[in-house]
Length: 71
View 1 (cartoon, rainbow, N blue to C red):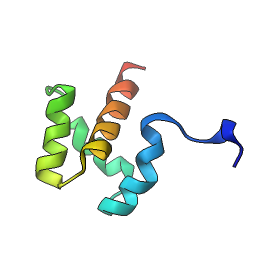
View 2 (spheres, rainbow, N blue to C red):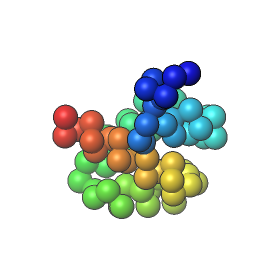
View 3 (cartoon, helix red, strand yellow):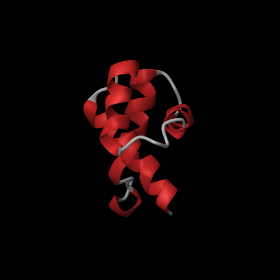
View 4 (cartoon, rainbow, N blue to C red):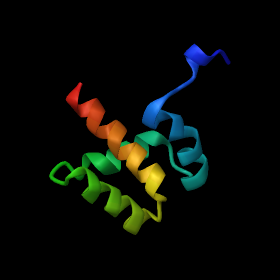
């Protein structure tokens, strides 16, 4: 795959997140949608505590989710 087509940023974690946790990204974005009142690191903490997600994966999902909402 040419470098210019390579996925960068938080979305680059998506294939690994889906494989590791057995849920599509849409599932995790829906989970985050239910946490609108929380701040970034609060959302990360919930994913880590309640879903046993690693910090990098949780942070990538939250960053993507929040950036998407701003757009």
